[in-house]
Image 1: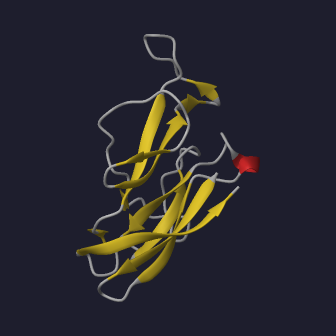
Image 2: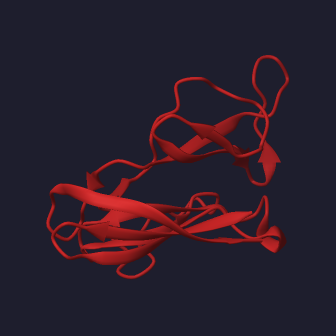
Image 3: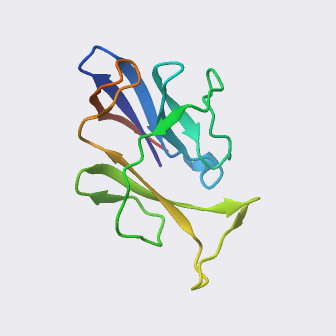
Amino acid sequence: MGASYSAICTCGYEGDATVASGWREAGKVFKFPYACDQCKAVVNIDVLSGDLSCPVCRSTSLKSYNTPIEKPTWDLTPKKWPGVYEHFSVPTTEDGVCRLTEDGLCQVTDYGLYQGLNYCPSCKEIGLTFSPSVLFD
């Protein structure tokens, strides 16, 4: 399941952010918002594609909105964490094959979208907030 968020800054900037993907793309696509300083916009990057460049201008000058999650988890279900809208664990793969931990578990990367004030690519200040708008499957 994926979620759309409205990105709104005190400077007047408005944009859209996507987290995850629909069921048809599950395990193949995982979109997450990044700030592109070149476009001065919030852009959605498929972090599983390995191409961490802006889909609009191809710049690699990006800042992730990922909020570090302190406690690692091994399941793929979304969780609520303090200060974070949603927490997602995404399998870390190489050429479509899951990387394994020393315990033989699938290695995951944790993503969380912070619900407080964030960096705004338009004014370059901390004033951008993400508000949930739509869930999709």
